[in-house]
Figure 1 (cartoon, rainbow, N blue to C red):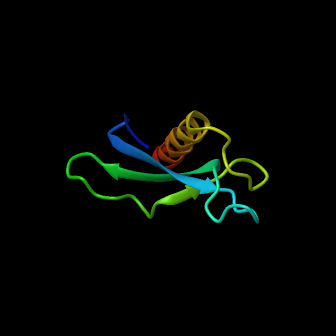
Figure 2: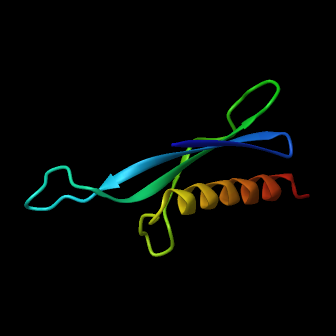
Length: 87
């Protein structure tokens, strides 16, 4: 899943990487959570700002739902943009 969001002249893209449980019974088990891959680009012309960042929840745990991962990714990018734009 992917979510794009425009914010203060930047395009935020959050892609989800599914993390699967590996057990003795399954080599490719059900989804256990998600990692948000966040990237920020200028809009016109379209140029990346830094490298994509893989974001996990507090305590180095994966996000429990797609919505949590997408929301956290967008908020983290907005914070980075606001910090970069600050004097």
